[in-house]
Image 1 (spheres, rainbow, N blue to C red):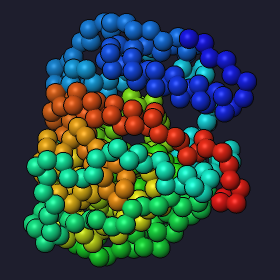
Image 2 (cartoon, protein in one colour; image 1 turned 90 degrees about the vertical axis):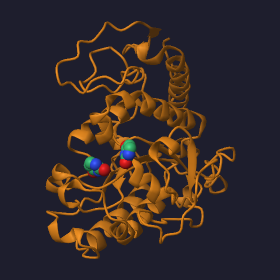
Image 3 (tube, protein in one colour; image 1 turned 180 degrees about the horizontal axis):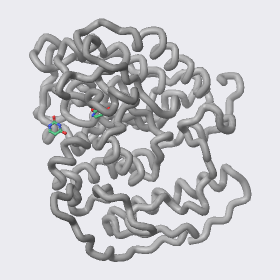
Length: 348
Ligand code: URA
Ligand code: URA
């Protein structure tokens, strides 16, 4: 398929259609779909990959294996030749001036057919129940003006003004530095992890260690770049020995994540692992019970899936995570991108 478009908007809409088409193809053929840089889409059987001793590769069917993808194999970026060039990505606030969604459409991105939280068997718990933070419920998050500069400044102010010097819980005592969050201030997708590990504590950025490398591959498999999404954690300081954050630690840190969420106002949240899911949904269910369908946090659809660190230890679960990720991709393909909506200069 060759895509020829006369202006940017046509091109972007064609790329969106192409992405939706690809998702459909992938649903049929798994990760056997190949897209070459000329935009030709074909379905092909991959050669078997050797998996070395001790390799964490596996998770049959999942495109984000442990080794980097081979050239033109598996999930390459969609039609690189036809994609809108965004050299600095959605992660940049210095790129080309974005458009801003018009007022009446500000809250219309969330489909009404995503079921509310209470799927069968889920228990809403009180904040006091051990192990669970009642992070919500709160009022639905309302999209504010979409200027990336304004949002980036709000995030910077939160980080510099409150998070960096935070001593609200014991985790502050052992940290090298806080790990605030990273990504595009108008990201459509926000990933929420558990807490920084050793590498994150050293570098001050979430998901930059081994689990981060796998998260990067998951993001790439979604045809997104790290700069396109927003990544944060339930706690901003590394728990000693990478233990699960204690409820009072998550509770102390929750206002920061809450503000990040209200500022970025993503169209969809991905909770990585049980603590993030429990924190966002206020339920005490297992990961297996929660994954595979959308829940809601303050009006925002939440997909729960396995934490990348869990996937490194249990590669067979990668297939399940890929199924979860495909639901997120389908949701995004069916939901308007706010940055592609017509500009309303009065709101920017
Ligand atoms: N695991 C997490 O939950 N968060 C990180 O930032 C890194 C690893
Ligand atoms: N339990 C967790 O806490 N996280 C996972 O990702 C899977 C099981």
